[in-house]
Structures are given as C-alpha cells and as structure tokens.
Image (tube, rainbow, N blue to C red; front, side, top):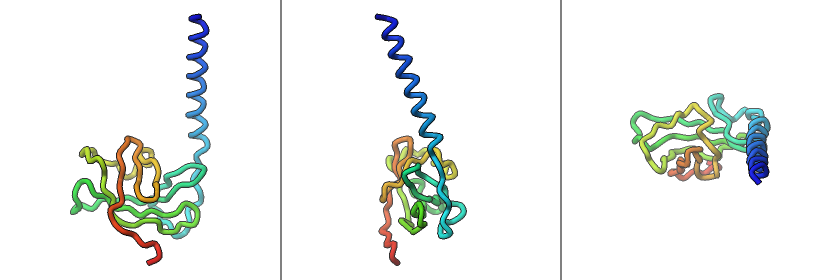
Length: 127
C-alpha cells in the first residue's frame, strides 16, 4: 500500500515538473511590428499576447502607472493611458521585468502576484 502511494506521488511530481518545462520551451516572441516601440516588452505565449510599454511619472500618485499596449501581430494600438494598481499594497512594480506580468485581458494588465493594473482612461483606437 505504501509503495503504491509513493509511486503515485512520484508520478504526480514527474508530471508537474514536465508540464512546467513544456510551457517554458513553448513560449516564443513574435516579430515586433514596425508600429511597436523598441522598448515594448512582449507579454504572452504561443496563442497570442500583447506588446506593452510601462512607465511611471514622478508627479503621478504611487498607485498610477502609464501604459501603451499594442496588438501582438499587427501592432495596432489597443490602449494608451493610465493604469491603477489594485490592491495597492505599496509594493513597487519593477517595470522592466516581464516575468512579473501575466496577460493583458483587454482592459487590465494582470500581474502574476494576483494584483491587477486596471485601465482608468477611455481609449479610442480609431483616433
């Protein structure tokens, strides 16, 4: 009985370990469209994503960031404006580290620690 439990645990650990490795090796960055700034970071995976430029202005409140979000393949502008961190824990966001960011969901930039950068400005991509 104990041997079966140990074998099951080992199998689960092996599967979890191999799943994590597969995800990392599948990530590819598409060619950057000409309309996307050189300082944009790629946030996404094999099925798509977004190019994102984040910045912080010294006159903004600590919870406010600036963002430019561009489409993955065509590089069209998806959002340009301010983002507000929620919840505001006071912890700084390292804007040059793409590993802390999850995905752009169309309105918000999800962080891997559970926080969200929520868009607070209206943006018309046709202007």
